[in-house]
Image 1 (spheres, rainbow, N blue to C red):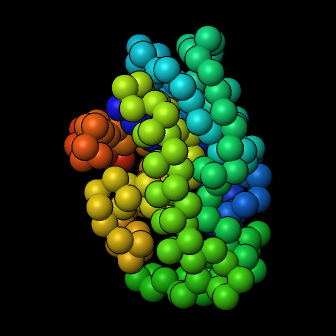
Image 2 (image 1 turned 120 degrees about the vertical axis):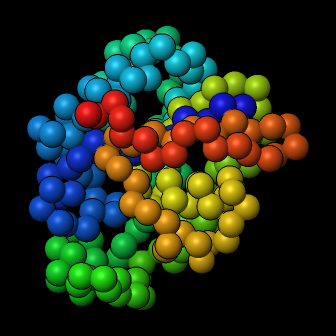
Length: 194
């Protein structure tokens, strides 16, 4: 299976440092342009199925991709939502306690990294069983992509916090063999945005 994982374009919240989590989010003008460039980059991929987060910012990104893949079946799913950040949602990073070089602990009412990891693992198990010889596109979010990558690389949920931020409209590609081993052929690429 070829797995293409993309992050949504920049949102108004991303641009102003707002933590969105399960909030819908809306693409900024820059985010719309990123989504268009991402769609052009994916235009010639032979995609068999698309799975997309049900949050607005992911769906707005998908809207651009769909223009080149009109006949590809699409499933909108809560399983690809961003982490639920609880009481941080709607707050600025400063209000949540982020400082240069310092990340505060997640609030008590947030989804834990382990819960996110398990959500990603369950989702990947379901699609690999059903579509193992297909090319699948996932349109999702920063932390969710990190969790998916941790699962694909046989890492633990603890490794998620040390991964680099996924670029808005960035692309990662994995080739999965039938024995569930994965080979990363592209990681967090934004060359199409330049």
